[in-house]
Image 1 (tube, rainbow, N blue to C red):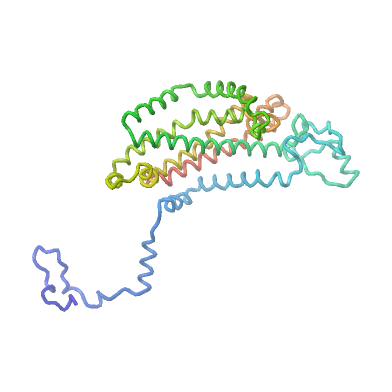
Image 2 (cartoon, rainbow, N blue to C red; image 1 turned 90 degrees about the vertical axis):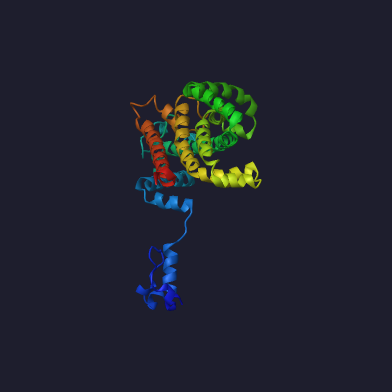
Amino acid sequence: MAMENADYKKRQFLSSQIDLSKFNKEDFRKATDEEKQQQDVMGESTTFFKDGMRRLRKNPLAMGSIVVLLLIIIAIIVAPMICPYGYAQILTIDGRRDKGAANLAPMEYSDMEIAHMEKTGENLFPHLFGTDSMGRDYFIRVIYGTRVSLSVGVVAAIMVLIIGLIYGSIAGYFGGTIDLIMMRIVDVIYSLPDMLIIILLSVVLNERLVPIIKGTPLAKLGGNMISMFIVFGLLYWVGMARLIRGQILTIKNNEYVLAARSIGTKNRKILTRHILPNCLSVIIITTALQVPSAIFTESYLSFLGLGVNAPLTSLGSLANNARGGMMTYPSRLVIPAIVITLIVLALNLLGDGLRDAFDSKLK
């Protein structure tokens, strides 16, 4: 043992060697199994995703937003199973249209419904949010409107992610003339007035799409909805593309990327295995923040009458239809406005929380 060797007992002058004469043999005993297990716990390995989720759980606003979004998602899934009314169903009693069911206040029954319950002893499902001007249950219309708005936001975010990721990766990785041409196209799209182009494209595409999709499953969505997705695919990906390009420009000259190139690794594999995983924080954050932006765009397009086609509804179209009776029936405008506010605010707070958790520059 080193302690028994006299040559190493005394520390030499200006040497970095430890003076072992100051230690006892007991100081060099082997670690016990318990100490080894403790060291394993203290040195537990983690991943980028686990580390980010750990920080995200410490953010109360982000976690509260997740709870709100989960409650909304559960409501739009469960409510149609419980509520007996359809989003396009005009209320009828014993096969006759209930004309007195129009414009009911929240939790109110019509005269025909009251008479029917007194006659049969049956308890009808209450109109939680009242009814609209055509006698349709407003609660179930808000539920389906929330479904449509959330679906539009998620689908639009996925479209933006795919297009922006591919476009930005190609421009940033290959650079040179390819990057120059592709980024000038992005600059042209950025220079267009968003609101005006969205409205013009929605009107033009809707007129062209209606005869094409007639008689197909896409006809249920309507020309306005499909044209809206096309608009998202044409205009909304440029921000994602520029962010991905900027990240790749800073990563592609790192040593591990140069090493992968030197051994002949294909460009596609370098992008997918070495570069894009290091852009994961930007991808997650931008995608999360794109969902509320798409929901807000769908809402104001529907408010302008360029959104979903009747009888399908969205939160924006519900608010648009409630404008005429805003003074008499304010709840029909307030309810969808509150739901839009909750969804957009929760998604924005969640996006900020994801940025704080996964952005390495903020650590």
